[in-house]
Image (cartoon, rainbow, N blue to C red; front, side, top):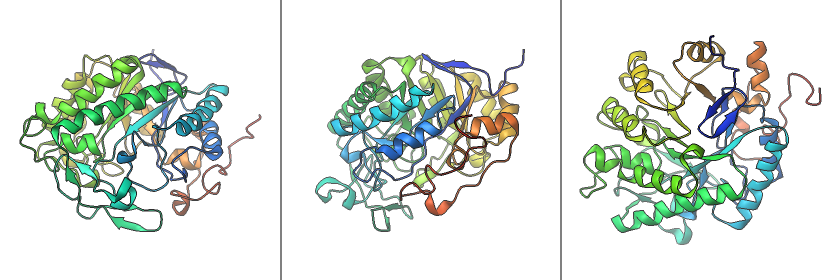
Length: 365
C-alpha cells in the first residue's frame, strides 16, 4: 500500500500522527531568553503537526547569536519550556527541542562580558549580519577555540539534552546545519584547523561525533535527531566538496540508531539543486542512511506528497508555511489555500503575526 504524507510513523522512539513536521523557526519573542505564555500559545496552535521542532535554542550563553532567542541552560528556561510541552501534549502533539550553538554567528554585544564569539578558526563570516536587539550588525570576528575547550561545549550539549528531557520534550535535535558551530567545524571554508579537529573529513566530523555520543548517552538514540546541510552555504559556511562531505556525513551518522536525519536538501531557503545536488545524489544519500529521513527545503503540497509516496523521503519539514497556517496539516490534507505570512512580523514583536493567524475552521470545531 502506498505511503501517504498523512500516515503515522515512528521517528526512533517518537510516534507521530502524520509526516508533516514543523521546522525550526527563529521568531525572536523570548525577550529575556526565556519562553513566555506567547510561546505556549504559538506552539499549542501548531500541535496538529506530526512533530514540532522548536526554534533553535542556545545550549549556553556563549551559544547565543541573536537577540531574544530562548535558551535551555537555566531553571527559568526549563520551567518556561515545560509550559510549552505541557500545552502541546494536552492537545495530542509531539515536540522536540533543537539544540543550538551559533559559533561565530554572533556579536560581542550578545556575549557575556563583550567577549568575542567562538569558532573553529578566527575567520569572520563576511557579509553576515545578526540582530543585536536594536539593529542588524555585522557578526564579530571570532576567536579560535582551543582543543580542550571543546569538551566543555560537548558537556553543554549533553546538559541541554538533560534539561530538555526535564522540560518534558519528546526528544532533541542536534543542530549541525546552516553555518552554526558544528557546521563550521564540518566545512573546510570556516575550519582551517591543523589539529585533530581540522583537515580530514574524519577530523572535521570529530566534534559532531562527540556531541552525538554525549547527547545519546544523556538520553538515548531513539530520542535524538540530527540536522545537516552539506549543500548549503548558509551564514558563509562553504565546503569545497559538498557531495563528498554529504556522503561521508550520512555514512558517519548511520548505525547510531538516531530518531531521524533532518536534511536541508540544497541551499537553505534557496535552490534545491544548489552546489550540484541532483535527485540522483539525493536518492543515493537517503539510501545510505539507515533510519528515517526528513526532507526540508522548498517543499509544497505536491512535492511533499509525491516524494513521500515514492519513498524519496519519510517525512517533510515545512518552515514558513507554518507561520501563517497554524492548521497547516488540515490545509494540506484538504488542498485548501494557504495563508501568506507577513515578513515584517517574522522576527520580534508580540502577538501580531505570531499567534493571531486564523484557522481554516474554528479551533473548537
